[in-house]
Each structure stands twice: as structure tokens, then as C-alpha cells.
Length: 156
Image (cartoon, rainbow, N blue to C red; front, side, top):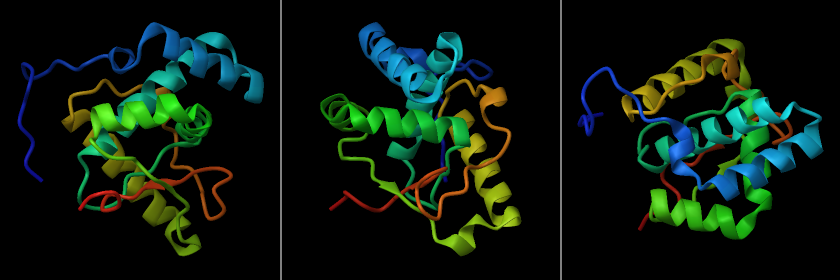
């Protein structure tokens, strides 16, 4: 994968910049309501979810995986269908699909490698990584605790 630096090396874009203040608030409010999470943590989750999705937008290689916290944010975002579709169109030019992983892909070694691949991709895309939200990849054979993006879907 070739990465072109769009900003000076060593700097990262704050993921909140990907969302309007109103959308960030809507997503954080949904996360607080559905998961009884503190508002400040819910905002961090929503912002980091936006960075994850923006990174998925340009991923054409292996699937990227969210952490458990980021999967909560992704599910909350998808519930706001218009906002989610608009975001996908703006950052990717196509819908970013939320795809449950094959149960075999959830094995620890594979999940750990996918998690690291995802963190590396987010950083390479120029977004700040909130490492506290990424202790491990989500386990998602049934889409209840994690999922992957589908790097080849939605593209002609």
C-alpha cells in the first residue's frame, strides 16, 4: 500500500474534524443511551469511529476491524441512516458496508493481527489513534460485538 502524506509528518488529524458538532452530539447521545457510557467517552468513541470508517473508505486490501468500543460507535452511526449514508458518500464515494466476520477469523492470532493492521492503517491515513479505545479487536461472528469493513464492496 502506498501512502501519500497530505500533512507534515508527525502530525495527525483529529478525528472529530470528520463530523459536524451536531452529528457528533447525536452519535454520542445514542451511545450514552444505548450503552450507559459517560458522555465524554461516547464522544471519543464517535470520533474514533469516524476515523476508522474514513480509513476503511480507502482500504482496498485486507479488511479492517473495529475494537469493541468502535463497533458500538459503528452500530450507533448506522442507526442514523441518512447521516451514515451522507458520511460514507462524502469520505468514500460509496457506502461502507458493515460485514460480520467468519467465526474462524475471530481466532486470537488473526484478530490481533487485524487489530494491529487497522491501527497502522488509521495512523497511516493521518488520523490520531485513541489507543485506549483499541485494547483488542471485536469478536464478530454474529455482529453483536464487532465487524469488519468490506474493502471491495460498493466499488464498480
